[in-house]
Length: 245
Length: 89
Image 1 (cartoon, rainbow over the protein chains, first blue to last red):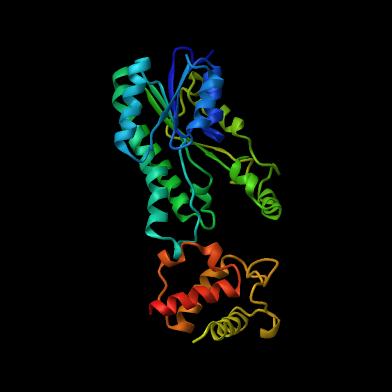
Image 2: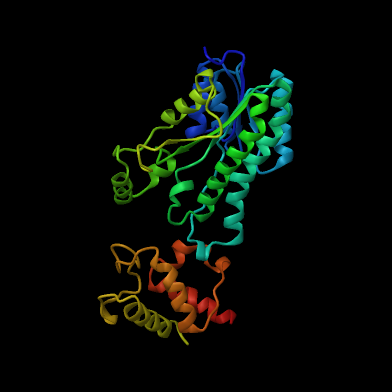
């Protein structure tokens, strides 16, 4: 039980990578705040799977600072500390830049980048007071590859990686670690919906010739929040089957 | 300009400017523009926007292109879109 007595907030934890991370951290003893924006039933299922004494679901749109502040207050009220923050909540809204609306640009930046800023800022005081903390930001290989139709998403994830480095420098003095993980193509609802020919096109790009699993990303998140990663700071770890090699 | 005239101009525009190896007569109104239909790639939709602006003297905003899947479905949907923009002109 590497995370016994630790308290973790996982944003966007009702499904996919967030859910896998929540379940894995919980299996190591951490108490988990299962954050969700709209999918309450799915979040409740994750809480049920972990156990009600070890997890709670909390609705908060990460792009809204007041809702994030409520989530932090509720976490402290329940468990009195915050050891781990996993910034996983994110959205996509693909469109070619030339025809992308202001809203389509801004909403993705708001959730994927400003949301991370909001959550980092909200937990920072508590972690500084504790003189400890681990933050893992979920980026994407899009940050370095800039996929077609993803100007908004790629920019948000590249911004997140810049934030990770700057915040890591600010927080190192307080024994607070901030790193990010950049998953490549991971099995998800979105991948499942892709046409077979497009899936084949994607698979051709991946040296390992398969999509990743949410659990494979979760293992890296677990590593980053344990003492095993005690000299890793401000980094981005690619979990992409070699697509960026 | 009626809808049939718009469709004819669009077909000619696609064949001439996007170098489709098709005759105007062979292009069906409901034939998908992309992939197995006319063989265009989604990235060609950007050039189609620019071509429509020039062909019909329109200025198309990103907000008007929100539902791209519907607009760029086939020649008919493209013509309906152009007709709508022409009424606003």
